[in-house]
Image (cartoon, rainbow, N blue to C red; front, side, top):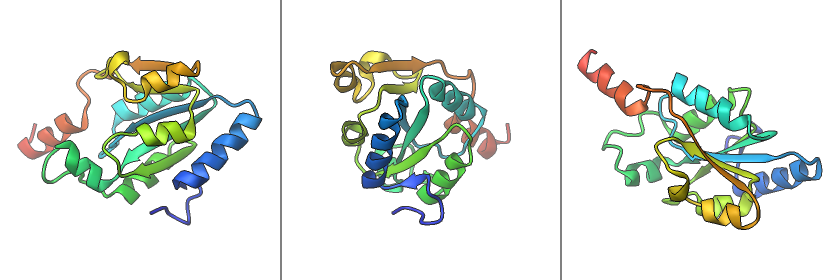
Length: 163
């Protein structure tokens, strides 16, 4: 489901159309994905670094159901998918957010055909889902460094345990 009041939250068809328009303008499309449950400085730094690899940043956002399947915890996500999408589009560096329900973003990557695929440093380049697909057509795949000590899981633990 997409938010009709926010044009940067798109469904698959609309993001494919936008990607086509951006390519006509010779814009490099960067794709990343994740849960982005509680947005923090680590996320902001990572997304700005990802955006710097091209002209347009598209985020594949895990749906609430897919987050549950990822095993992040019974109470995760803490924020609903529509709320997480709204927060992400408030960032200047984000051009589009697409909520996906699959266990991996491979289908979305194949549909968007990004010039650059990016994940955080907890993923090695050879383990990034869709990496081989992107490399086959000459795209780039990058693993960006994480901001040390900043993760949603550690933030949730600190809140729960008063640290």
